[in-house]
Amino acid sequence: MNSQRIHAVDVTARNLKANARLSLKDQQLRNNMRSAMDSLISKRIISMPDEDERENLRELGNKVRARALSELPDLLELLEANLIKQGIQVHWASSTDEANAIVLKIAQTRNAKQVIKGKSMVSEEMAMNEHLTEHGIEALESDMGEYIIQLDNEKPTHIIMPAIHKNAEQVGRLFEHRLALPYTNDVDSLIQSARGILREKFFHADIGISGVNFAVAETGTLLLVENEGNGRMSTTVPPVHIAVTGIEKVVANLQDTVPLLSLLTRSALGQGITTYVNMISAPRQPGELDGPEEVHLVLLDNGRSQAFADSELRQTLNCIRCGACMNHCPVYTRIGGQAYGTVYPGPIGKIISPHLLGLENTPDHPSASSLCGACGEVCPVKIPIPALLRRLREENVKSPQQTGQVMDGQGSRYSAKERLLWKGWQYFNSVPLLYKAGTFMATRFGGLTPKNLGPWTQNHSAPKPAARSLHELAKAHLEKKS
Image (cartoon, rainbow, N blue to C red; front, side):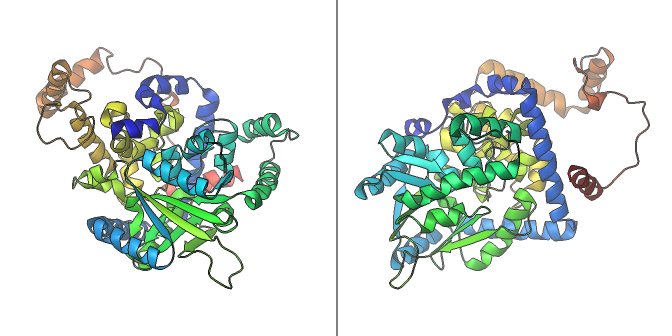
């Protein structure tokens, strides 16, 4: 199955270190990322100012997702039965190759020439656009960020905001070059111009494709949230709708989606609620004025069952794809999403990509973290990301011959020399007197002094401003931007 999974992703996943070095030299990228992340951090704090309420909601979200995963096989069977009962065709795919073959067969059966897509990370995981294009079918992204990225022949840099690494000037130049539009850096004008082009495409598309935020087993409902309206257009205007999702997105009932929706929108964008909540349970019925004639759901495994099989690693599948861990990650903020070379970048990508691609194809990802813990503290469903990163590091250096293999590519960084080095490092950190002596000597002789001092290491003697709460800082930041 490894070879099938590798086919669907950017092979630069193995070049994370080299990619990171290049990204660190791109000052425009770093400025764009810093500005965007600061804004998202501020909005999240303001949307959930009450710490007790926030933590209670996170605890509830964790329980909802944990309960769904504990019943995953049964819930998937119930979901399938209810969807079929309502006229939705269900397809199962163990790999991205199988998922692409299913989508292509549906398209060819309908003689489709044009496909329009709402936002879907699973379709990115499948490299669906490239696969359809190879078979003569145009696949156009309708989400604004995805559309910008597609025009520039890039991959998304963020799971919620794919083009967050670009500023308005860069997008204006792109539209001028690719769409022959007059240059402007006015955001509203850029959005309106692109929407005018996309609106025509909805009415000519043969198939609409979307992702799924949550699949409700009890009612057979596909729930999709969005802010632009393109998801609703993609799922209702074309005569065929194909939804693609990972098998972990199932929940037991509609009641379970309430806390998850609140957590998703506030954690992702600082919104109280998303603009559109779409619930799809059947194709168009007799007498209805809109909706597709056919609805298909493709359930993709692609390494998820491997994570599910381990009680600790299973927590990876709790993710609701909000991107909060990325927004707060110091590593992601400095190198951007494309440096990872994977569909899912940042902290969540570092724990899920090894399951999708194998550790041998993501050898540096589990180690590309300072383990500061910010990702775990802000995760709306309390995924212990730092603990999972440490676990993956352990799997990465285990002997390939060791019994009890739990992951593809396990032991990809194993070597007797490196194992001895890590054993020594472990011993050094476990003996207080040795650790104290070592750090004292390193500090005394300048071994821990950064070569290039940044603003955070300078002006130690300057008077410090009065401490302010995170809420005050966030409010001040937003007032400054406005």
